[in-house]
Image (cartoon, rainbow, N blue to C red; front, side):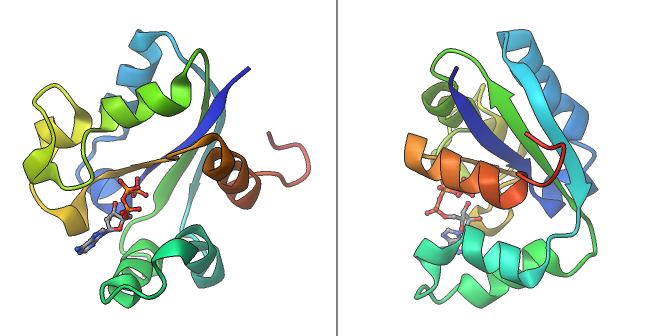
Length: 139
Ligand code: ATP
């Protein structure tokens, strides 16, 4: 069964969009199999965004995810083509290019505050699920 890691970032939590985002995945028919609210440790955020470590916005991105002004909601969703469909439901990385009807296209405008994260491949889904979950009794 295919699984993906979806996170509501601190801006999405702060703006009370957690229920909206969960609802969209539920109504589509996907199954919620992991859920946690946390302020991620710096090391976790750095590992999660390791591919972006050379980017000029990396330090700001890690700080934003970890500074604790709002937590992150980490989720694992399961179902047919959930990795690809999840990315479609999120919309383009830059909300200025996200279609209406997508989460980013409906709720945000700034790439640095784009509300949600979703795994972009089977490989990153597996890596991210074990990074954010994978403790005792977790998915
Ligand atoms: P995510 O991994 O969050 O789902 P993505 O895979 O669509 O996003 P990436 O290119 O991997 O896009 O970028 C990861 C995140 O880094 C983006 O979602 C955004 O929050 C942040 N980011 C990307 N580009 C910029 C930028 N130019 N300025 C600020 N933040 C950026």
